[in-house]
Length: 330
Image (tube, rainbow, N blue to C red):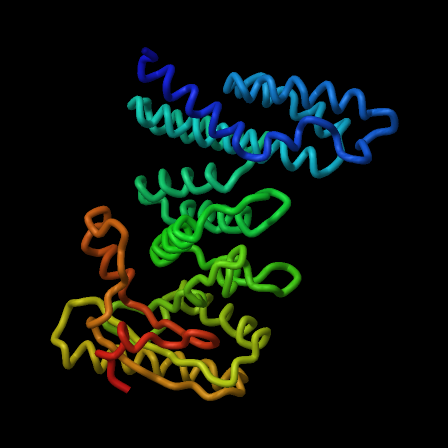
């Protein structure tokens, strides 16, 4: 009978082999350099052999030859498979109780050779566990980007996994000190802010609008997020948006309802003053609709308060869920 370490090692090799490995059996129709097809084929053969043995060091060393001799899709496939192997091996090391700092350092180092959404998701989880929320946001956003890119992820994960990564990105973003850019250089929404990821509908998101404690005043991050909301609305041109204000759970219900109303109105005034031509509907919830956290015990009380001091913006398909927001005033 195999001991646990051998069983897990074979599981890793099998998992890697099940993800598009057939793509490496021959180079694409055009090699990266003239006459490089044989060199590409040789490098890919050695690369596959290294993957089968979960030999990440040898596989990483072959990336340079694959980049030199093989066509673009072979290079992307190689880096994707190597990133997946790095993610699986990192999780095994964590299961064995190895030092987290060493696992993170090694996983980040392998990003120079390979990338995969599973590796980014793992780095996001580890950053969250260390309360490095801005780093976690960056990693989860990159995971969604890789999932959405058919060149890097030939077969997407299932709906449950995509939604879980999206929810994790939302939690990280709500505590990040650095506002994120909601659009690509071409003006399209990044996958987190887009309505779908690989055909899976995800909750409609806009940049998180955050406020100073007990005030209807944008904090510095909320100010930047409000500014970044405007290009999204100009791009998607909704006829109307619904702005919903929230507070943390300190203070009375009457006080929090009034404060959340003033926060929602503050964003409404900002949008209209800066040229949004559509109608802006306002609702306010006080403390009645807290953010749903995957692991509430993983946050301090102050962090939970910070997450809930927010204004949400809804538009497009789906709109506002009355099941969830029916307790709010309007």
